[in-house]
Image (cartoon, rainbow, N blue to C red; front, side, top):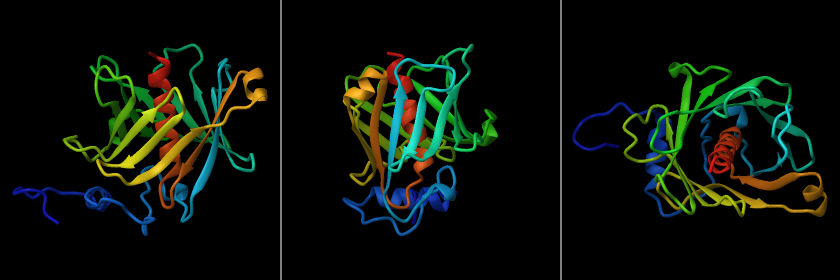
Length: 222
């Protein structure tokens, strides 16, 4: 596989995404795409329930469970600090990734680092809005080794207000995850916003959760 006239060193993961993005459709992936870690990739679809507490409290404003209600992730931020940093924890409270907003950027841009680090060497991916002003949700996602950012590795499209967003591989029509709203009278009374996310086989579901947290932060800041 050649990328133009100049030879470029491309990771197997990014090469696979480039090839996949050229296809009009794609069957369930034969190989996992572990953006954050292989332990978050399953060979079958994963359905996640995400509860967002409308009235934010110190315990964190997100809880992510499986369909049986078992806690998988929770999201916390520094209660007394600026709204520019979030940490995704596993069920045991261990930090998986740290999300940090890049200040003084024309687009809303977030960077995601491994564990509780914010060191550039631990950067996993970054995400930014496709345009400065946008009515619909559009988010471009770039893996850390995609420094040129000429073509995104993943793209998010849809309507965040309706909790109806779809995540695609690159510029292709290949869906890797999609979300939909789940409203109930109880959730409204409790000040909670609940929606479901279906993550397709062999896609890193911790990565998808991180994207959803970024989407919420971008739209909450509007």
